Image 1 (cartoon, one colour):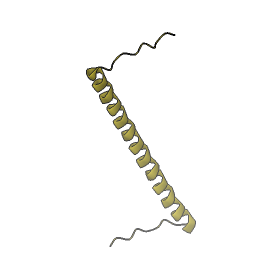
Image 2 (cartoon, rainbow, N blue to C red; image 1 turned 90 degrees about the vertical axis):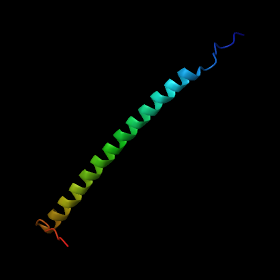
Image 3 (cartoon, rainbow, N blue to C red; image 1 turned 30 degrees about the vertical axis):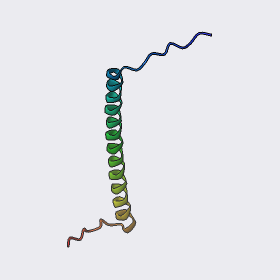
Image 4 (cartoon, rainbow, N blue to C red; image 1 turned 90 degrees about the horizontal axis):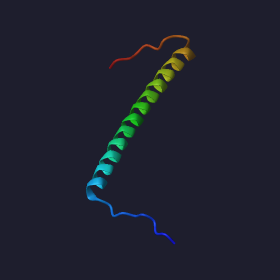
Length: 64
């Protein structure tokens, strides 16, 4: 039976791959945060409109 062509890992190649993975994870996290922020903003706007519609008038803002 033929052995698989395994090669020892080279530290420089491994380091490059790990840095690439780290950059991709940071990008994915940034996209996730942006999507969450956008979704929360839409929910807040919807909640505001729902309150306004339920009363039939625009709610006045109270400042303290």
